[in-house]
Length: 312
Image (cartoon, rainbow, N blue to C red; front, side, top):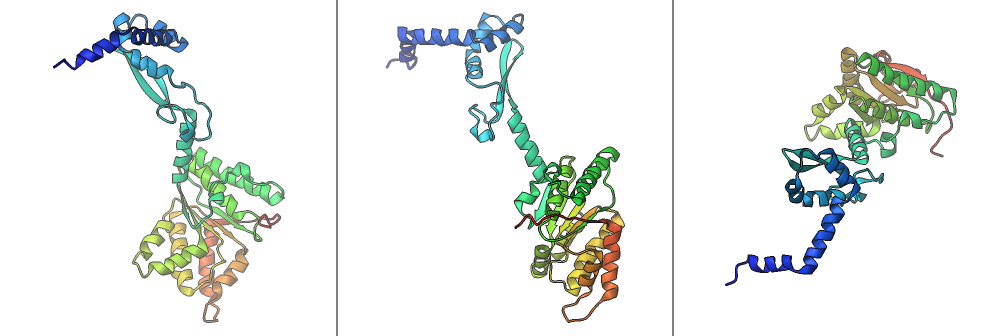
């Protein structure tokens, strides 16, 4: 029986194969990037080193070494999507590494930012907002954008979060929720985690949590957040239990621990207190509502947000 390497040797020795091999070899060695690399490492590489590493050099020139600027690394044409090949010499041997391209870095940074924002029932467009995206068409919006930017700046300069957040109130659709998302993203870029909560849905979920024994876990998750953002407080159907045992517990803990809390509402302080005082049984519980409001006032600075309804 003929040795297995017999046909292989004959195939290699045929003129057409040799011609193609030599043509590809010249193409590799004459490539500008390869020539620049070999010139840079001329003292470390000899003829045999280069010949042995022709496959690596071939792989190197077959790909882009600069980010193509695609909008998604899934569209990258390199062998490893989102990675660029680089060459180096280690003990007279050519080694090839892959480094992240600019688009890959941007995607990972966006993913890291997204991971720093925990959302409970908030729409995606709100969570993708930035302070630069805020529409400046009203004096109140200018002030809010400045205060949000100042909050981020103070956090960055002092290395810690200010203890007070904002209580943004105003009519429907003026962009209060958008401010929360923008601020959460700015803080995420500083590796500060925020929990953004749509209050009406959260309170409904809390009621269901009684049956599956996750009530304390969910309340703790919210109340201990480094930064808590409560959206649309006052839009929920309030009960004495959700007011005192849920919201009261959350606000008391955050006030004691001086954790920044941001709240949006259609009500100002006085109107929210009236809402909190109403019970489902038709009574009015002024003292308990006042206790909740004292905590909210200790946690936030009230700011009215005006402007046109952007939902229309």
